[in-house]
Image 1 (cartoon, rainbow, N blue to C red):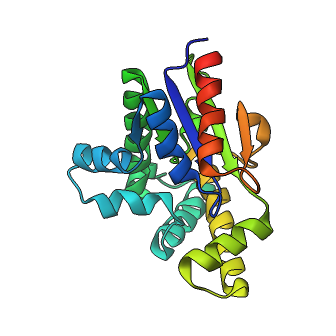
Image 2: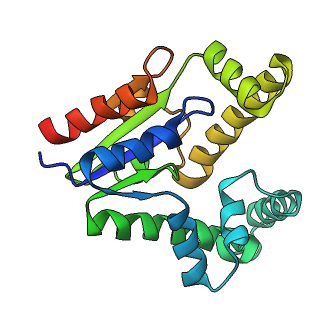
Image 3: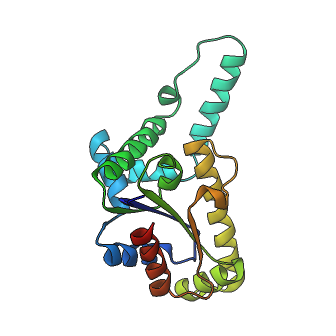
Length: 206
């Protein structure tokens, strides 16, 4: 298989963004992360912030409206479309469309946005998960943000919940598994540079 696209999923504190940039340099692919949201916002004619927010937990009003819609549906009333209930649903589709566009252009390292799940059946895609042990992740977040470890641990827990909710909301995925990826890299010991070289080796030798 000739690898044309690398997708990098990551847990908070695993240094996935840094590794993604290094991989793009190693293999000569362009680095794509914020561009996904920027393009989706441009297509929708809305602010980047409006689109970026759909990747996080839904707002209270969205949850209320979805609950109301469920009741209406169960009582045989008019069923609203996802876009009528929550306009962010259309933004989710736009993000996914942009990911497909970037993949179609080839020679890209796509970081985050669930690209590994969306492009699972696409030929020429190497799907990578960058992670680390909870202890390592907490230590890094505490050090990098200047927080104490209990606070860093809470931030990691919140991030992991958001991650699970994101996969459920975007891809109806109940559980993220290692088998959703072709390569899983644990950065407890590996430096970002070494991790990037390992991924680059997989790209050029797959």
